[in-house]
Length: 115
Length: 116
Image (cartoon, rainbow over all chains, first blue to last red; front, side):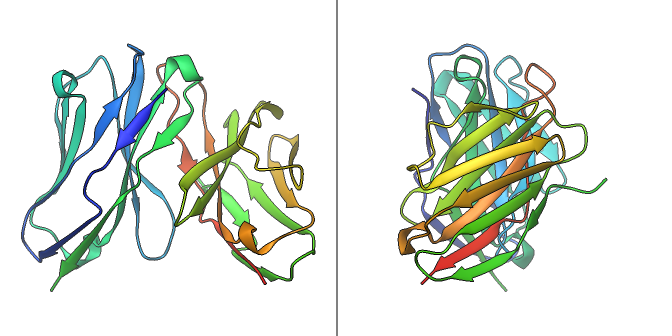
């Protein structure tokens, strides 16, 4: 069975601070995908990034960066120079080939950025 | 391109009433998913379709829930009769295909359901 753990329930930072969200996953499949979604206060779920199990390259997109490490089964997400608009719930998710790529979500981490 | 469209955005109903939630996936997407989000259980997959055919409904809580996809551009999730514990946000999502280039699910804005 697949499992995603986001140990941090809530994180509060002051604007311009960096914030790192942890995600640890469990699967026995060798082919899988990892995702991050953002859920702002308005409620929608916004896709941020997808990585596949064969590509451990880290990625940077603007103020966002992702660190994928298979050795530790982690897919961490960093927001650099946080802004108030980054306040949201962030979900890490996993889909595996052996489970027809159904998404398993972590519990989410609530990020609050204070001005 | 328009994203996933859901209606209504908010629904308030009384226990025992029938509730129908609607979803229009992104054009050309082969897969459609229904999720439920609650504080207690987080995001749960209820059912998903591939090319309008239900593939896995193991997440549907009970017989009061049913879902249909009569064509590639429309799906419904029906609750009959509704109960207060069905209060949640219901999301519809769609994805292009399975395989190396697919899997990314794009979500609609959700329907906030409150059953009194």
